[in-house]
Length: 138
Length: 81
Image (cartoon, rainbow over all chains, first blue to last red; front, side):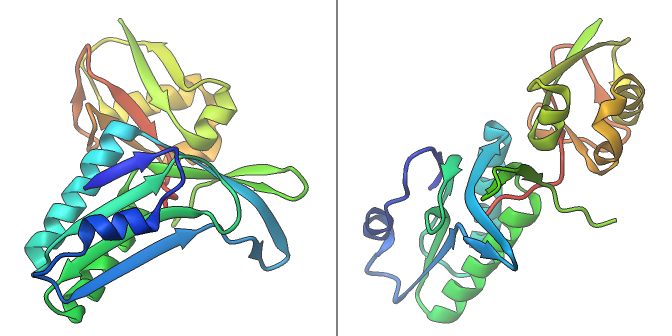
């Protein structure tokens, strides 16, 4: 299941939907808003997406993960809108019969999402300066 | 003809809109469209060089031909997660 949401992410609900009797391992990755980066203080991150493409790409990443590893369930939910420090911005859950597949697939899925999916964040700092984050690798 | 391009992130901030509309002959290749945008919207600056184009929700390559009625989006480097 792949979702983009403007609501808070409820981890217990996600786990309820993914825990299953066939899988002995469940890995949950949570991305959260970090308040301090070196000397900078972050007040909020505001996320936007090119939603139809983002949903399609995340689903494709999940499909590839299912081909690469023997995994049971996979779920990705990503926030849109404004998130305050400690709020969950993204959750990835993978379940597998054994932990190696669950860890490897969960790690791969979040890496692919961060590298490729059209989602962006704008950071607001404690001086009320806002900057869109666009990592550039010349 | 006119083509509307969806824009995101810093691009949106620089043109103060979530889309830009430009006049061009269609079809046009992705690279030609990017060059046209660069000449018409210098305020997009260096960031444009790092952007990708998508047509109908699929990443375009430089030679992808953009037809009338396709949804076109200009995607700056991503920062989800």
